[in-house]
Image (cartoon, rainbow, N blue to C red; front, top):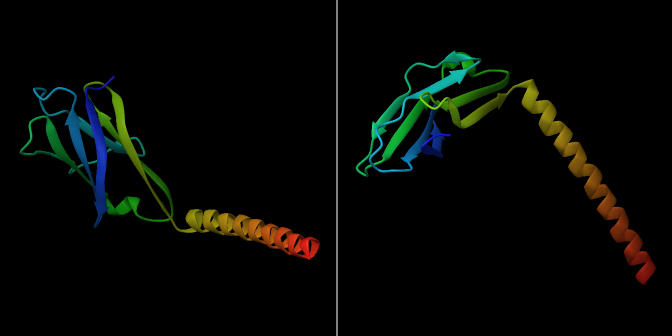
Length: 125
């Protein structure tokens, strides 16, 4: 169990950003580890805010993680060995197949609704 909560605030220009909040305001900054493919990421920063017990976490996404496929990043409280959050990048053919399957399902459902509506209109006339 971790004494910190993490809330995503934005993901822009290759940097995932979140707000770390301690359960108790007197806790020190947490030890954060971010992994991708079981390898630690470099350049992760934890910056103190004006409010006690709150920090801004910034995770730069490495260029080699941007490409075809699914890439998952785990954000860990290193001291508690607990997962605080994760985020996933999906690109290329993996995304294309998923979107095409979802569109095919939506089209099939729309066709079914059109047939049911037409049948209803014929029966009520």
